[in-house]
Length: 283
Image (cartoon, rainbow, N blue to C red):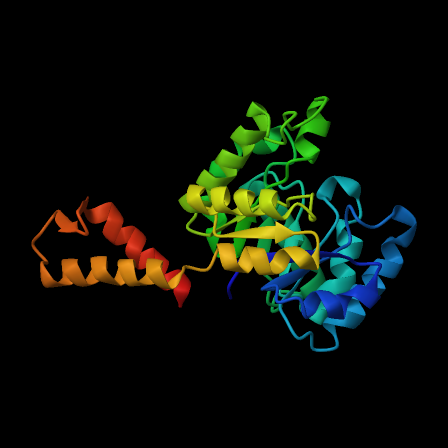
């Protein structure tokens, strides 16, 4: 499954589900957490169950409420029988929290039930910062790792998580980096967080370029208008594919070489590894 673009949809707005699925997103995230008021949680669960039971036209994930809310069990009981493609897990706190969520799902599905993979939102509490390296121990249960830029500053009592020019403050930037390292340590997809100003086309393009440069492989989205830009940003261009193939072919023709010159630049083992990874992403 490609995970370039993952589009959030409020779970209590079922009239938006089909439009989101038709946006071109690699997956939609039916959100029962932040975008749904407490009074609407039951309605949201029913809407998600109905959507999942109707053979969705694209991968459909469900963001449940966090363990601390006391509502996670109700969310899972409503949606698991209808086989969501993944569970998005907010305020995750490392491998132990994944085990807790898995145990809850086993209690609902029974010993023989197939558990859906999990996408943790891995940086939303101060305690989570100290657990990001532990996801490599449960990588087989994860479909990727992503992060959030809003809950962490709120949890710390910070005035804001952004500088006046929109850049993340140092503590939030560190959380982003640790999530990126945690994802690659676990060899799973690294998903950039949302860009809230969905009408800022140029700013969003720069944001996505930075994300790909740094090693993220996809991004969350909050509006269908963001999907095409995300898919483009995280899809290798024809020129990149051609260059990667040139590197691979050059080393195949010179298996004993540690370093080669291609296009006036020296390339070695890390470049070969990156070229192979790019070709794998391109399919």
